[in-house]
Structures are given as C-alpha cells and as structure tokens.
Amino acid sequence: MMNLMHWRLLVAVADHGSITAAAEQVGMTQSAASQAMASMEATLGAQLFTREPRKTLPTALGLSVIEQARVMMGALQAIRTTVDEARPLLRGSIRIASFPMVMATFLTPLLQRFRQLNPGIEVTTLDVTDSEVHTLLDAGLIDLGVVLNPKPERHATVLGRDQWMAVLATNHPLAQRAADASVSLEELLEQPFVLATGGCTANARSLATAAGLSLRDIRVQVREWNSAYSLVREGVGVTLVPEMALPTQRNGLRVMPLTVALHREFALVGSHTQPPSAAVSALLKMLAD
Amino acid sequence: MMNLMHWRLLVAVADHGSITAAAEQVGMTQSAASQAMASMEATLGAQLFTREPRKTLPTALGLSVIEQARVMMGALQAIRTTVDEARPLLRGSIRIASFPMVMATFLTPLLQRFRQLNPGIEVTTLDVTDSEVHTLLDAGLIDLGVVLNPKPERHATVLGRDQWMAVLATNHPLAQRAADASVSLEELLEQPFVLATGGCTANARSLATAAGLSLRDIRVQVREWNSAYSLVREGVGVTLVPEMALPTQRNGLRVMPLTVALHREFALVGSHTQPPSAAVSALLKMLAD
DNA sequence: ATCATGGCAGTAGCTGTCCTTATGGATAGG
DNA sequence: CCTATCCATAAGGACAGCTACTGCCATGAT
Image (tube, each protein chain N blue to C red):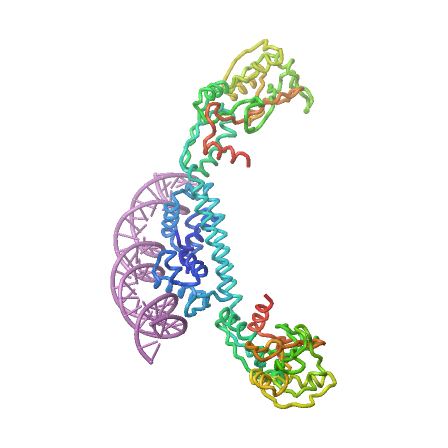
C-alpha cells in the first residue's frame, strides 16, 4: 500500500487490462502482482478491479484511484527529471572577489544562503581592493567580482547603492548647522581631512579628483573606517565615507549628507574571459529573487 | 526511496526544519528517519537537506523535490477521500423491472457495464409486462422501472425511442406499393390481424383504442414477436410491431412505416415511494454519460 | 466431451528492506 | 566547561514482499 511500485503496478494493470501483463511490464512475477493488488484492495477496503475471465477491468472507484495514482507517478517522474537536470549543480566551484565593505555586508549573508542551498558547490572568496577586483577579472582568475559603478555595457547585477556622507566631530564648526542641514563637497574638502579608504581606491581622494577639486590638508590616511572615526572624534579632521560604513556608535560624531549627493553603486560582474558556469548562473539567478 | 512514508517524512522534515521533529510526527524513531533521509539522498544521488547544528534546511534541489512530494501526498490524500466517499457504493442493491424487449436490448448491456463498475452492488432484474412495472413501482417493490411514454411530470431518464412499423407478407396486397410507400393505421387495422404483444399491454390493440379505431379481425394473439412473423409469413394476417422488435430475417416479409408515424418512448423512472439510494443514483449518473 | 490455453489466486519459504535500541560526535547556550 | 539538542552510525531483529510452484476456472478448439 505504501510502496510506490504498487501504485505503478496499479496503473500498469489499468493500462494493460491484465494483471499478468502489468506484472511483466513492471518487472515482477504474476504472483507478486496478484498479491500486491489484493493487498491494496484490502488496505483500501474496496474493490478496484473486477476480475473477468479474460481481462481485469477497473471499477468506478478504481478509475478514480487510478487517476490519482497517475498523478503520483507523474510527480515521481518530475522528481527524477528535476534531480537529473540539477546534477550539474551538485558539483562545482565559484571564485568570487570583493572589497571588504561589500564582502562583509552583502556578500557574506548572500553566500551563506547560497552555500546552504547548494552545499555541493565550493565557494571561495577573496578579500581585495576594488582595483584588484578588476585585475583578477581581466586575468580570468575569478568567476565573479564586485565592482563599483559598473560600466553599463557590461552585464552586471546590481547588489545595492549608497551615498557618500560627511562625518565630523560634534564640536566642529560645520557641525553646528541645523539638524537637516548639508555640507557641500567643496567646503568639506577644505577642512583638515582624515582620509579613510576601506581598502578601496574609490575614496574621498578620487571623488575630489573627479569633481575637479583637491584635498588640501590630509592629516592622516587610514584603511579602517573605525580608525578614521576615532581620529575625527579627537578633532584631527573631518572625513567622507560611504553610507554603508557609517559608525554604529555615533557619540561625539555628526553625520551630514552632501549638498549634492554623490552615489556609488556596487554590482556583481562575471569573468571577462569565460562564460558563466552552471554554478555561477545559479548564484545570479538566486540573486534575482 | 519507493516507500511513500519516506516521502511523507521528507515533507515533514521540510515543515519542521528538523529530522527529529519530523520523525515524531510521522511516528518513527529519529534513527529511522535519519536513515530514511540518507537513503533517499543516496538513491537520488543528491543532497536534499543541509544539516546545520540546530536545523535541517532544504537545498535548492530539495525545495523542488519537496514540492513534488507534496503533490504525491496530495494525490494520496485524494485517494483516501475518494475511497471514503465511495464507501456507500461498495454495498447496496438495485431492483429493476422492465418488459422483455427493453430488458434484452437496452438494459442487459447497461447493467452488465454497471455490474462491472460496481461489483459490490447487487442488481436484480424482473422481467414483467409494462403494466406490472407500474404496479411494482406503486407498491415500492422495485427501485427502478422501465415505462413507456412516461408522464412528463415524473422525473424519468429516457433510454430510447422507436416507432411502430407494419409487417406484412410480401404477397399481401398492401405490400405491393412502391419501395418508400407507407400504410395508414386505418387500412392496416382493417386487415386480418396477428396481434403480437411482446409482453406489453401497449400493443396494436391499445394503439387502435387510442386512435378511436378497433381491430376488426384478430386471427391470432401471440406473445413472442417471432411467432407473429411466422404467422404473417404464412399469410394469416398482418401485424404492427415496434421498430426494435423487427425481425432479423426478413425473407417473405415486407416492413412498412405508418403514414402518420406513431412513436413510443421508454424511460427509467425511480420508485414513487422512496428517494433514490446511492446505488440508484450511481446508475442514473452512469446513464447520463 | 475432452483437452489445451490463458489468466488469477493461494501457499511455502526465503531474501532484503526497514525499524528499533543503543551509542558516539558535534554544536550552541548556560 | 557542562549540558541539551540534533544527527549519524552500528547491530540486531521483525516483517513485508518477492519467487517458485500449484490449483482453479472459464473459454475456445478439436
């Protein structure tokens, strides 16, 4: 009764109009088939077929049951094909590179989920700078890379976006403005500055260059955002950081938007040298949901 | 793998996020469940769940498989309810009465098919005259009866219809007409007549009475149609029979339609005293297809 | 009538699946 | 560090289900 082979047998009996023929099709003895059918009818407590001398035909109830049995067999077949189609995803590997901030905030939970869904795929991550990501992509050493402000001609999957924010000590003159006030890029860059990179070449310095300005007075350059916040808090200078990297503890600090907001966008792009593997496609597809 | 309980277990694991909890729900040991899941994954050759310290979550492939497994469980449930709903039809009986002609031509194959579809229902037939059918129906002694030209106010299921045909010897004067000629009821009833009843009170005599005519010269009255044909062939007289009862061997006989066609309709009607049983309803439903 | 054929049911015995009990290992939380 | 929780594994046993064989019945041909 609970054996799927028996349901398959049931369908076969209906198709052949004969227990013997059905038994042969599903590869068992006539005796086994006869017993199986009798057992199913006994379990259900109802006759499913009428045994006539030359043929075994379904009863009215049998017809309904057969219909549902076909549904079961269809589902079973669907499982088989699903598994077969998913076989390329059972093994595989993905090499993926990113700069630290996106790695920590976006990629880690994403990849954790992906690993949970695809335990057979080995995902290796490289924590590098944004310029190194491009180098690795060009060299074909990684399958996926996180890039900032991707060129539109490249097929890129946007992970998220944020904007640059000014961080100042609460007692700094510019921080005395109204609660919803902003700071212009020009006036910010003229202040004594703490340059924080977060491991990215796309930082305050490159923003200044792009805007035709320059950083007049760089007091310190640090890699870690938190180091920059301590320095700002101590009054060494002001700084400019991505929204994502804002400090959790903001005592002694004033965070202000720029008057003309500067956004940055980070996205996943595939290798330039190879087409995406099944594993990479699965990852991008998961990202689309 | 081929055990339906295992698929049920699979769904339960997905629902609970835990093998142990699922095992409890389906009523087996944690160990059995663990083995079963491992066995299924081994058979499919793919991992369906990722075992994490606190929870067991489906993989991407697992999600697809679970979806199909739910379909299977749904079908199984549908079978259970179907069988339960059909239980009243497993036992039961139908008493059905008819006059001989319809019994032989319509009812026998119909009931044979019904018996094949509903072997648990005992069908008993009574071969009576058409007037006795009404008596039995009124007395509540039968569940179904075949009646002629049912009153429209009664809920009747039409089985079929035919018309009355004249049968004459080929050398009879009236039989000398053209191939597509007809005979009027009046001129036919004036001939020397062989009255055939077929066990029905609705016969040539009742037709005559209904038409305001009479049978002037009844030479013989017989019950069997075939006896009447022999008598007609021998020149004893002419006769009037239903289309259905026409002879298979027509040598020596001429069959002609009536100028004004007289139809008869036979239909199944239920008992007047009791509502139809589940078995009777099933029979009528089968007839509707 | 008699026999041959084809299909289903029943019996005995064995094989193999699957379950249970018991134990070990890994991890998160107190 | 200890405990609770969850899963995996080992060993043993019970039972389902299969095979091989026989019997029965109905049909159809000789």
